[in-house]
Amino acid sequence: MSPDAPKQSHWCNVAYWEHRTRVGRLYTVYEHSVSIFYDLPQGTGFCLGQLNLEHRSSTVQRTRGKIGYGILLSKEPDGVWAYNRSEHPIFVNSPTLDVPNSRTLVVRKVMPGYSIKVFDYERSYLLRHSTDADLLDGPYDPNSVRISFAKGWGPCYSRQFITSCPCWLEILLNNHR
Image 1 (cartoon, rainbow, N blue to C red):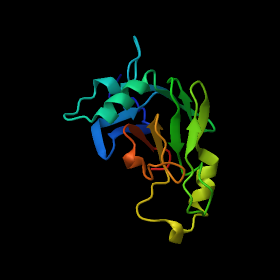
Image 2: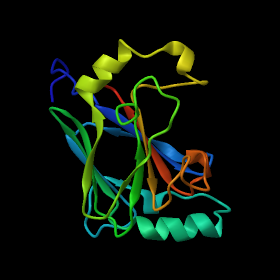
Image 3: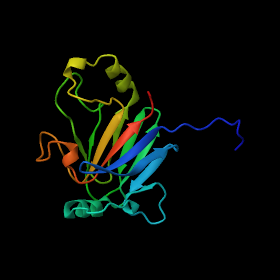
C-alpha cells in the first residue's frame, strides 16, 4: 500500500466487559463483518477466550464458557446486524430498538441461530433530530449498542443494569462521529 493511498476507515470499535470492568483493548473493525467468539476453530476476528483477567469470578467463568461461537456482527446498507452463533441467547439494547422519547429500556432476547438488526441507520438519523434531551438520564451515546451473552438485564430481569451482566459487549459505531 502506497503512502498516498486512502486509509480505510473503521466502522466500529468493540469493547468487552465483565460486569463493570473492561477487559482488553478496544477492537477496531475495518471489514464489513466480524466474528466475536470465545472459541472458534480456525476462526478469525475478536477472540474473547484469549483475553486475560486476574481474579475472574465463577459466574463470569461459567458465562464465558457459554459464548462459544459467539456472534457475527455485520455492517449492511440498512444498518448493523448481529447473528447469534452461540448455543445460548444473547440480549441486545440499542437506541434504535428503544421506543422514541420513552424512559423504558428495551432489551431484545435473540435465540441461537437467529439474527436482529441491532442498529438502524435511518431510524438513528430520525432519532437524533427528534429526541427530547430532558428524557435522557446521565450519559447517553446514540451510536452505541450493548450485547450481553446468556444473561438478560432491564425491568424484566433481576439484573437492572448491563454492568450486572457477567459478559457483555459495547459496540461503538463510527457512522456519525
